[in-house]
Length: 439
Image (cartoon, rainbow, N blue to C red; front, side, top):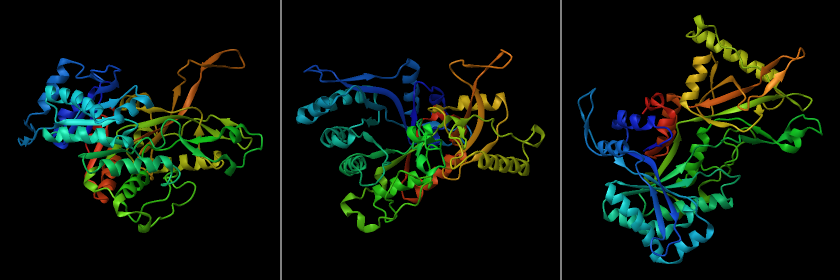
């Protein structure tokens, strides 16, 4: 399933270009809000933003001919996303208070589905784990019309698989699995904009260092392979399920194997019910080195081979080795730390970086993602005043993690290793055509 969003409109074109490799497309078009009206009860807002968007999904809904091979391509299922927004705790209590509430919600969604001739829906809400009965009412109604339902759940990521949050997620997945078509697990943003936590007490920092009190955050890839594996093994009840999700990169120790006895057969979810999230984007982080004094220092990115040697594998490897050695010399225990919050990075910014100048690209083994370092002027227009009184713009030293076609291929292979046959790509307009080549 490929997500398409109005803010990355290249996705509309890509969905048609690669339709032969997609089973379904989920346009991100709808929100559901509690209206407070005793008659309407729940408002379904949104729809195709432009008339051309309506024409687009209707084309996908019909068979087509592949111009390259001449073969007939089947219709693509259209499952728009409906997301709960603006809901308070009391609104959820009201929804759960009586069967009529779930029926009212269902009928408002069904009116849009039937009018637009959609093939089903994707439902997303932060309280999905608690909505078994309303979702069952909706699922039964959709299935009665030959439609499909996919529900979205967060990934397991807390300190222990038995933590309260993870327990709610696991319980929700188990409860929903019998009557929905797929449960999409959002296995992305493991590192996210805030980075991953690093215990400063493990570093040789001065006792009064601000890093000891404020903590240290590290950059990292969006989706480590172990993050994918740990989630699948937990939901599938595998004997390889891991005890903790706080460190899929293996920085702070090894996971303990809970063993088969830690799971009850009733907790297992059939593999054909799971759909794993695959991120088609990465993050860029402003970074700094840590000095022995406990202060931080900005440094310049590692150099790339000269233009004439760009395509030389030996030269590329030599420069990567130099960059790794340089990090080992400058850093204490952490190679680089976050100097500020990171940002999602799109294919457009990647293109700009490589158009403006050369960057040394390296591969992160834990995730298959590529990463590279570069300089970017600070967004606030900050300037540095030199000793002679002249000024110069201040630039962030940045590191970007970004999936390549090989990354996408390897993620899908990890998913298939566990017998799971479905993935959800978020979002194809953000990643661009390059990342769809591996499908």
